[in-house]
Length: 258
Length: 263
Image 1 (spheres, rainbow over the protein chains, first blue to last red):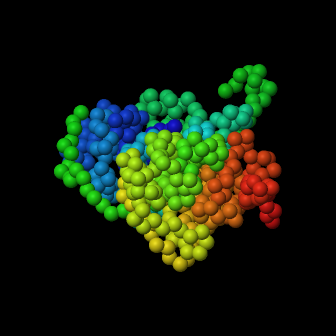
Image 2 (image 1 turned 45 degrees about the horizontal axis):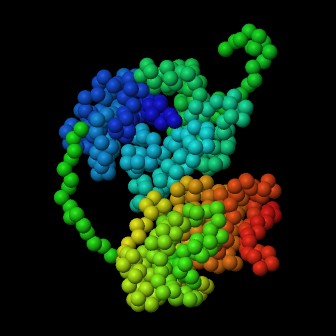
Image 3 (image 1 turned 90 degrees about the vertical axis):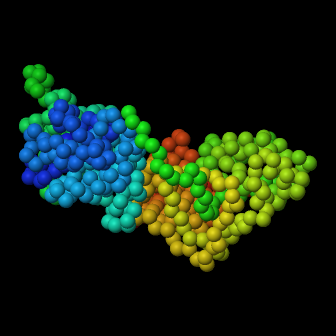
């Protein structure tokens, strides 16, 4: 659905803006973030090692190869997901805060099991990624409900977690043809402020195969769309792009321009 | 793969709890007759109940039979997703057979039913994450305070969430999504889209209504009379302001849905 791709791009975007950022993979057993960030060969210790006290946090943090102030905390490929304890996760996040990190991005696994719950428990803000299709929207609705009941903020009766909606794999042409929900439909169904729309693109595939977060592919729609998302997250006003489909004109069709 | 040793905790622990249960007043104890009646009442919705703990009350049994076919009766109720946990108001010989069938005898237990109108207990909000496990102990409803407030829900009610306004009305200020469920003993007022299951008059109040500014539910029900929308919602109502109430059609009760003029 684009959660890990988004986590990698978003965390990189924050780091590019000068914020000291950590990105944590909560998908224990199916880790992917390190692949997308291109640091899979440098994983020595992981999140679960830190929680179990087998490694110190700064031994496990991997410095990103593209950004100066971005660090990756990979998930364990071999452990059981029950290894993520609430106390352990809290301790790690508190320590990151202590180390002067401005943002901690928690990459949630799919579903509503332990990893996902742990990823959202300590959230201040949440970016819910969804695809423009009915089943994906329904799942996002469910996770939004859990966010508002299971998060620490909800449990302590504080200000609720701030929600953002991010649509990924959006194809204006298919929306135009009636094959896909439009971003307006999705927003109407979920009633959460839209933080961005990421167009469907092959460059995402290239990026993840190369281990480069999509935001670094200068000049592509995807990179620009993620840059907009980061700006909106930081409170800047950016018009929505890549949501309209322009029918190719006659000349373009004749000459097949791309 | 390593397996961590289980922490040394007590294997069993006892806690005090009260359990909300449904009381099924059986006027006949004959499984086929009950099957017919349940089928008529619930029609296309065999999962109307959600494994709710149920106490079978035989006080109004018209013609007490010599014996009751417990396995047949229990499997019938389970088929309709009711979880019988005990019986009351049975004659001693029948009560003994019920006990042998694994049901608790709850004659002595304090079962307080909320009176239809006057005293109402406080509203309760529940997350549908963990269905309540039926406890074999006595089901007891807390004594009712004199008045209940309307329950206000400020945030959207999401898929998988459930809210119950016990004894009173509920106001949804941010609408609800498909897959959510709102239940009120009184009326349901929804400012925003009403999209999931809306059950008003849950304790039998037929004058309860469901009012919304954006009509699009999966199911509406008032006092046990329900309506599904398998064929979709009429275009004149879908997405529009509407209210649902009980209307009499001769002697038959049915739900009437009318659009509302908002300006």
